[in-house]
Length: 430
Image 1 (cartoon, rainbow, N blue to C red):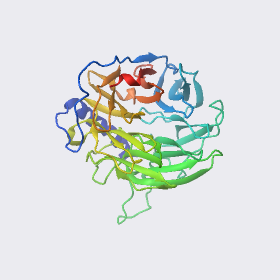
Image 2: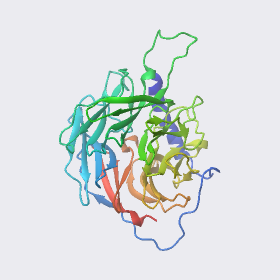
Image 3: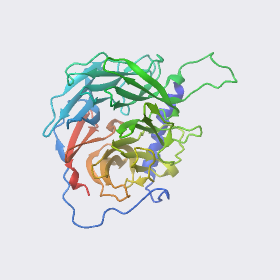
Image 4: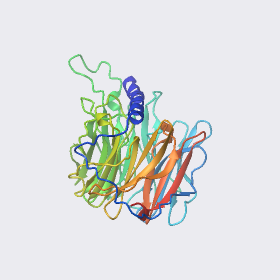
């Protein structure tokens, strides 16, 4: 685990240098870059704060949507000196419901970048995941997945989707509501980093890489389809997954033998996963994990992916569109307006455009920003959702759409911290 711990610490210094030390002045020739929409009167954009259902000492929010037109907000909340709870609330047309608790414990792995989630499944039930320590090692923890058949009032016994039983890292999970009612789970897996002393000789090098793995769980808790999707991925970048008209698509940060860490994707069609491919080759070579994963959204055959890259020492947020369920992606579009730290989220809109959200800032302060991006590369005006701190504890801002409104959630850094929420009208973003 020493190698993994070192790779977690080192990239933060690099990110600081990249984010604070330069403003972008060079454009990647393979990326689309067009001026913002033509000048003229614009409708007023109002970011309206809402009453967050999260309590004191809350953090790590996640947003998802349901088939019946609601939003689910989940978060981690500290209860007592050592105990944490996974809580969630739903929102319909007007306000958030009272918070409910999925689970709580004293032996959880709680981390600013590796956060739990609650999603709705196709049969109307809910699924949730969180992380539980499996040993004394800093990064020894397991994925726990539970299901509720009564809207979150009660939850079944948690299931661990990986069967290796090693006291290593299993995290950065993305849950997928499969069409047959099962929940699919995608995670970054550290089983190859276990202590394998004596299991090889000098002629057989030991595997030291994190892998990307998948499994599915049915309504009765039966585990199936556990498989490895990629044999070498970035150690601590988030994954993201969505359902297209052709099946599931998942995006993540790959790691080559030469330490190039670009965004790759895999698709699942007719029960089979295809081989990994790059969304785009930025050729970002970095000797440590940047803790900055991608985000994907899908609607039928349309797919949008957003990600952060520091290639050529130029910090950028990019987005790419696909009209064929991820079979091909158009050239990426540069989205940010400078001084970006990444931590992206993406949201597809009915007209084919997308919202991309990211964290921007310098040592003097940061801001959560969002921008509308068209598939042809045209860009709307960046909007500030909230001023924020750029520390790790500020986490990753999240987005979800409910009718004509887009909802935002983020962690307000402090002692204690709070999960904050806000809304804005989709049509005001031009």
